Length: 538
Image (tube, rainbow, N blue to C red; front, side, top):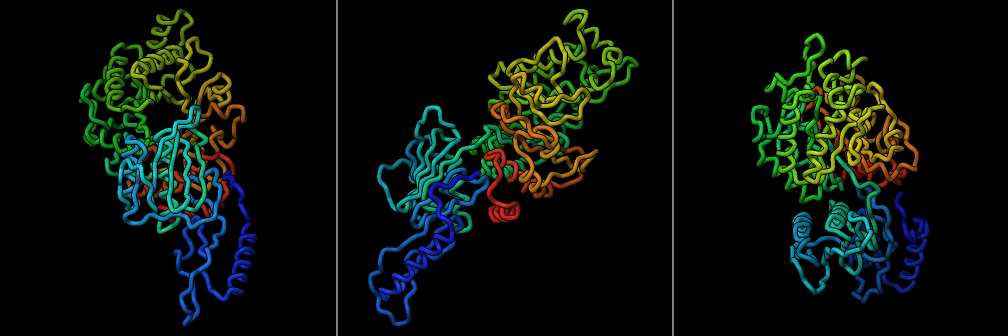
């Protein structure tokens, strides 16, 4: 919840204005009080009202009410108000950086606000915006301080990311001619992972559409974009190692690099996802000999035969290739819905897998052991590239003799799978978890099965990062293990909506999700006021 240092109730401010007006009236001078708030209301300085025919006379010092916090999405977490006119960007005002490492952030915000980028300067001028990194050992690297004082703005942070997020607050505060309020904002996110996951495998999205979402995410202070680009229906990014698996409609590597570069400029990490050993239909179409078959010889849709060494070779080729293309620190390995494990007796249904499990793990080896070993192998492949792996919660199996590697993060999305385990089981075992709760955060095209399009209002009023499954929150003791979450768009029925309809449908849910990831406490604004703010900032 937002905290306000030295906030004075509105009725007190009004009383002060009345008293000030009475004093002015007794002096015989009509002076306008320019009240600055976070919405930029009020007249410009020097617009004092004078009675007709009144001779020009020196005005007494203006009096300002205490400022109000800037209205932004997500809301700032702490604002210390002050008296003063606030700040608005004007043509010719400068953006100055204290360090050349902030040149990209400085040039971007200068262009957005119609200001001049001046680079590194030692002098101070009225109207300046100064960006500065100030090392603070132990501080959240995404935290920032925004100070509006004496006609200037300073945005500082312990790292470039924090300064970037501070510029997003400033941009929203002055949106539409608004005013950045006098005073000091101190702000930081509650959760380090704030993501948007996009299924580009089942529905093709063009590069420009994805870039527009990156700009939207950046202004909302998201820091991850997940790209699920391999599934049963298609493989959507150009491949040099296995061009035979790539679908006709796909992103080229040049387009993908442009997406990554734009995201990087917004301090957004692009997280690639190659889902295995299920959801590999596009790979199997080019390599039908790797199709998993049951005891009757019937092909199992989307499932690769993990007893075949070539299966691991192909997937590792792809993981190596895309680890080089995507420079971020994360890699999603999928691991959900492997069809060999959704039957009542996997060993009887898939004797080939059962034999491979016994060979690898002894006479008691199970298909679940073999599948966990597969996941560990893929995790080690991406970890060799200094990537942190994550996998869907139904890729972590209970009562196996093989444990998933320690560094593997749990992407918790559902509790509907066979043998489903509540989130507390993963958390009590010491796992770190990311929240993809399909009850609130899954936008599934066509609304198949029991899915309905999520609303921003429901997320805003009912969801928090600790609500990992259904509508119940896990104990507060696990809060630090919940790293954050991700809103996700899935293309189950890709023709159900156009790209434009998807963009419109997810706009408010994205705003609501990041509000709760930035600050999970009950928001100060009502949903109606939050929606109005989101509509204004759109």
